[in-house]
Each structure stands twice: as C-alpha cells, then as structure tokens.
Amino acid sequence: MSGQGSGGNVLAAICSFFLPGLGQLVQGRVFAAILFFVGMIVSWALTWVIIGWVLVPIVYLWCIIDAARYRGD
View 1 (tube, helix red, strand yellow):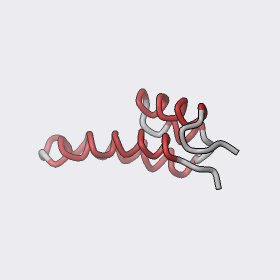
View 2 (cartoon, rainbow, N blue to C red; view 1 turned 135 degrees about the vertical axis):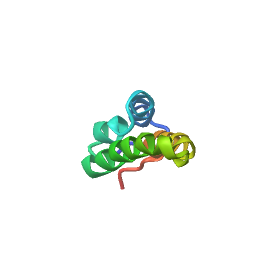
View 3 (spheres, rainbow, N blue to C red; view 1 turned 60 degrees about the horizontal axis):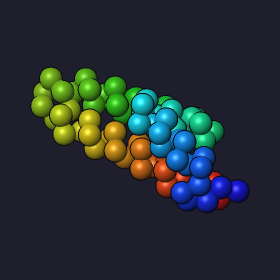
View 4 (tube, one colour; view 1 turned 45 degrees about the vertical axis):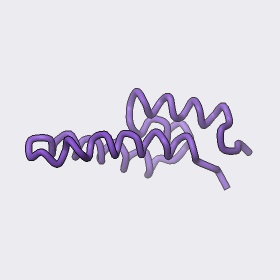
C-alpha cells in the first residue's frame, strides 16, 4: 500500500499538473478524475463572467493537492 508522499502520489500530482484529473485516473479513481476534469472545463467556461478567474486556480491546485495526498485505505 502506498502512503502519503509515495512515488505514486508524486507521479499522480505531476500528471494532475499537466492535465487536471489525470493524476486521479493514474491512481485508479475514475469518478474523481472525471469530476476534476469537468470542474476545470466549467471553471474555464466561467471566465467570461469573471468568477472563473477565481475558480480556475482553486480547482487546479485542489486537483494537484488531492492527487498528492491520496491514501488508498
């Protein structure tokens, strides 16, 4: 079992850095991967009403941190 900070989590965080949701997919968390990917699409779509400019970095960082801190209990 991989603990927090393991090589798998680091790889997942790097994957999420390049494509939000990819790190969760690498960890086998398909539902979380879809949610983060769709969340980023929605955030970018909302940039035209200003709120997206706040949501994009929040969702982006949340995705990376989630992949890095995941524990497969």
